[in-house]
Length: 266
Length: 283
Image 1 (tube, each protein chain N blue to C red):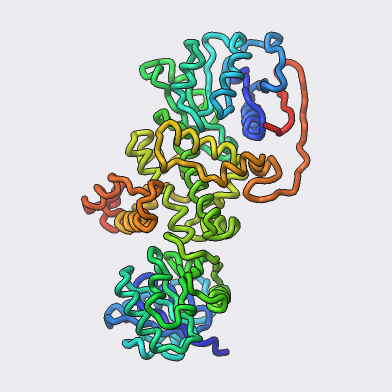
Image 2: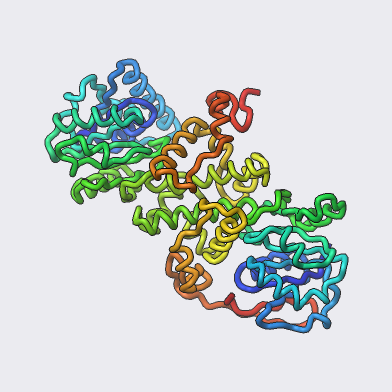
């Protein structure tokens, strides 16, 4: 069941996913738009995983790798901030595509997959479910909407907490503690957002806001300002909280079937 | 050592839970309820819980010793001399305001008067008193003896002294007090709204099923999914909290209740307590 995987994207989310796939025995080649490599020297890819949340970035990455992706490859594309139906249409090739989300890949035992409208009756879809099932995930196939289930609910919790914070209801630490101690949440919303990335949280909200057009999903201005200021969370050294800069370990191992990871920047 | 007296107004689930917290913490407790039966029932409920804890070795003192510190009272006037009064009566503004008017007359301005309201404005409750500076919110969570959090709510008129005294008292009985401004839903009931509301929306839009949402959220680390948790809380209670937040924010769309929830409430399927909610418990 070992697959040769092309992973599109960089940053913590991509690195965590690469590590997880390798732990399952897969060969992972990470492709970063800012540091392109010649993919023609690599063996044939069976699976493409795209962790970019922004549709434009997805398309930029796709444009540079599409010719190296065989027609029978499976594609998983992050749907935290897009409908997979839209992404599949933009990819403009008759590939087997599923939406997924790469958040907390090592801790979640459930993998959410979304089916694009174009594949409503596609009987090859079982293969996509199989891919994650074989790697120990319980797969839940949900309908195609930005943010699927967990990213959507968590982002709305973070958004509400962020509104409360900017209205001066309580301090960030107190809001986090209250949610852990008052409702048994596993983590406070701000701690959680800093771990996942404030930019990812904002992207979920912005996408729901534009796709559904409802004020309900309007991101708090404070979330936007954090992202404008580059305070995207723990891996940036600062988000809702400040972190002691941890040294980013760089592993750059080049060559066939090996992992290529770079800096932690976006 | 005598730690002083705390009066709890209302002997229901929250009231008797709060009474237990202070009694176990070494305070003399007066438990008031207009209804004698409710008062006796509340005191008995405390005894049963203490006995259970004692049997499990989780209680330092004997249940009887703690029970000796709890006294049922039938008039508010008997609460005189308390350092703190915590009101945990019905969630109705007129009821609470009546109680605070009386308490304000009975107690010297140094007694802290606290409301355990979860959905009302502490400022509005305090507004009927002549010493609103000593009126605050002390919002305990259910079950009060087990949940560590207490939201200490500062109204528009609360004094720093009242807030810090209440923080100290909560700390002293082993709780974690957190200061919050008097805004609808305070912290927890407000920030938690999307956990239920967005889950309902996802199900309403057929993005996922009730069971799927619960499985996915449990996998993310929540002890219970949004639907099984509503079943436990009671759908009517949860719907009331959502509705009150929505109305307190003058119809802010983020808090808009979902019609599914009202349909469920109207059907009488209120969760575990009726044997059926989003799931069945009667089989």
